[in-house]
Image 1 (cartoon, rainbow, N blue to C red):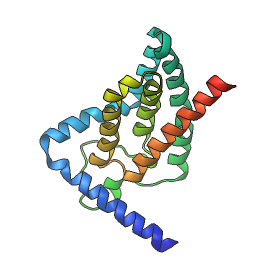
Image 2: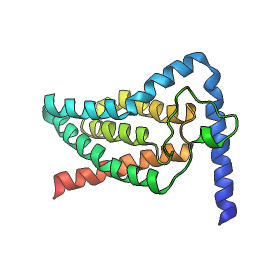
Image 3: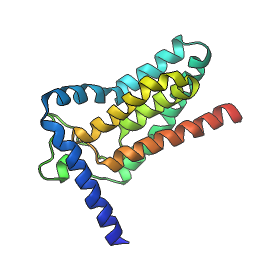
Length: 177
């Protein structure tokens, strides 16, 4: 089992280096350093509450689900970061590129990715046409976390799974109980 986990870790580090090695491109640095903030607490919480306060119809239903999912998804994020203290790749891997003043808390799972999918997936469920805009944004936010040297690919992947799972759990509890 240990040999399998080591191979997975080796592959993940190689994938991280491939993505992070693009860091020396000035325009990509600017783009990803800005878009990553769409997954931050300020943007996701503000967006969810603004939608909740000012929307109607299907968008309001999505806003209710956004708020519930965002809240519920960050309980496991908080505990996983505490009890699975995985160092960020720029702290662990030699030659990883990172911007000034990087995050210093634990890496697993990606809170930005979890938060952004927790807000965007409910909107895409209720208003599928928005997926043309929100899905590429989601992929950019997720990719940015690796590109910027802040997360391993599995941190981001688990953030996507966690946000997706909590969206469907929240939807079940809100509308079926």
